[in-house]
Length: 191
Image (cartoon, rainbow, N blue to C red; front, side):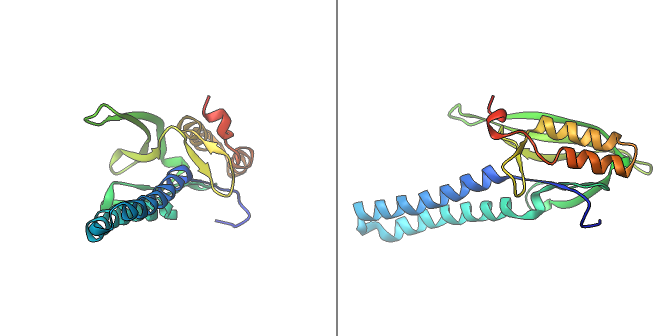
């Protein structure tokens, strides 16, 4: 890809920021507990150390550029799979079929609900028929355009992918990427 051609990179900035704040909170709570009862230093160190390492590993995973969704003139690039079975995928616009987003709701035993979105993308492959790809998008706040304060909700991302897929030429895709370089402002997303 030519460096002068536009691209849109969507990252999980809110998740990364929340985990960063969580790691700071773990450290603060550790020192508060130490001030209350210093006799259980090693137990506190083990407990909060494990929490911190888990948060740090999650933070590093989310912060990795490999988890970004990249929309270019030539196609769509993303990471598919879960945990250690993730692999980088790149699909050209001509191979993309139906695109939709799915809202998933998970409930804990205590009744707390959390929602997240997946993009479902059908790839047309002459040898294998149609292959379904599931892209973990994120929670209700959407993904943020890298180096920008703008946000793309899952619905807006699907609309953009469909526009790029249906564009007739490379010039058309360049214009669509330039016109859509900015997503919705965070205030619009919360409405």
